[in-house]
Amino acid sequence: MGQINVTYNLGGIEGLCLIESTVHCDSRGYFVETFNQKDMYEAGLYYSFVQDNQSMSTKGVLRGLHFQKNYPQAKLVRVIKGIVYDVAVDLRIGSPTYGKYHGEILTEDNRKQYLIPRGLAHGFLVLSDTAEFCYKCDDYYHPDDEGGIAWNDPAIGVEWPEVTGVYPGSADASGYSLADGSPLILSEKDQKNPVLKVAMMK
Image (cartoon, rainbow, N blue to C red; front, side):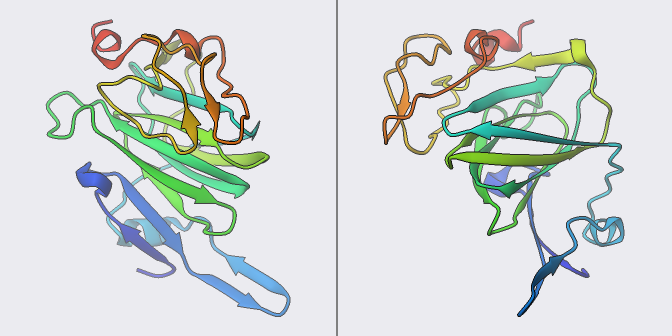
């Protein structure tokens, strides 16, 4: 399959994949193909990406868990600077892994890419001082289409690394921190996200 190695159906979740690209190193540094559609197709991953996004976040920032309501997007995510813990949650009604999550550590050094199919919620936590995060989407962003699920929903039970705190019955992050005392930082909107059971009723 060319320049990539694919681990399929992570955590038993259909379509959730980890992609590792061949890295060519010498005394000057390294070179890697971060995306090759022919290799993807040969691996059975038939995606046509239409939009690239990039964000920068500081330590303790947690973004998520986000999903699209009517215009779902598949995403191919990677980290170009720093370290994040990246999480996907299956929201596909009728799926045998509905409500189940899988997480992966993505770093600038391991160069792993996480392929998240349509119908999954997504979020990540920054574990380094800063992190730069890039991702491709197979549909355009629709500003009024975004939904959210509480990052700490006990029914999902994401084990966010280094996070300490007691569940307050909501997505409020004020009582949480990282192991080194760094505060957990969520947007005001994400701290109001409902639990999965409520979010899927809307």
